[in-house]
Amino acid sequence: MTPARWEAVDRFLADLLVQSDHALDAALDANAAAGLPPIDVSPTQGKLLMLLAQIQQARTILEIGTLGGYSTIWLARALPAGGHLISLEADPRHAQVARANVARAGLAGSVAIRVGRALDTLPQIAAEGRGPFDLFFIDADKPSNPDYFAWALRLSRPGSLIIADNVVREGAVAEAANNDPSTRGVRRFLELMAAEPRVTATAIQTVGSKGYDGFAIARVVA
Ligand code: SAH
Ligand code: DHB
Ligand code: MG
Image 1 (spheres, rainbow, N blue to C red):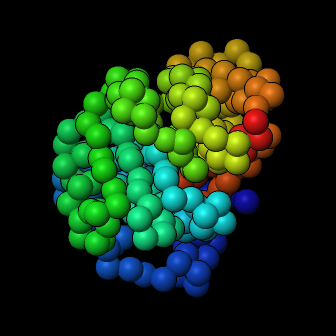
Image 2: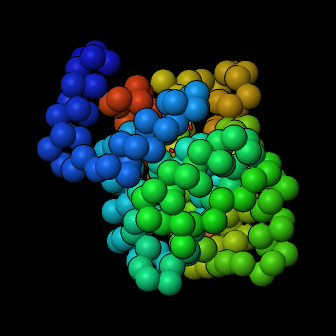
């Protein structure tokens, strides 16, 4: 098993199951043209996010970490009429590219992108009385994942879904002595999830065009 094989299978699955789509292709092109890092979720992962939001019948979604809005577009496509998604992004340049991508996808009416560090914008969202959100997608700076989990819980209701990207990190997550701040943040986040009586949680390893990584998923039960 090699990364080349994972990528070939991901391409096969994406070509077969994820219909090519002008808005998504154009978003990735615009990201590249603007020099954004190519760290969006993959096409098969994006469609998984859409399916999870549909299964959840999510009407309200909070995303932490927008980049160019590729995952945002997938998630927002799951929303019913009147639903909305708020996405938090620290980098104003990323947010600007994302807004154009979201508008091109015809989703400007249901998506709001808020610029600022999420630990600054999350308290504003709470103060505005927004929420509860039906689904959270945590995909920003990984050292803050423990804080993002606490905010997601605070802005949730029983039945909400909390999804986090990049929790395996080529296996580094299983190294107890690993000192990388992102790996430590993800480990702490998983430990908090495990110890939190208000959620039922698991995590899944993935391979594919994004290498070897994984998702965590938690359902708020109380
Ligand atoms: N969810 C996107 C990828 C997000 S990449 C997708 O799959 O398409 C992570 C993003 O988080 C980057 O755009 C980065 O600028 C942003 N970010 C980093 N630190 C942040 C913070 N403290 N608050 C909000 N966003 C942050
Ligand atoms: C990085 C961040 C991500 O969210 C991701 O999915 C892949 C890579 C990064 O910061 O390198
Ligand atoms: Mg990610």
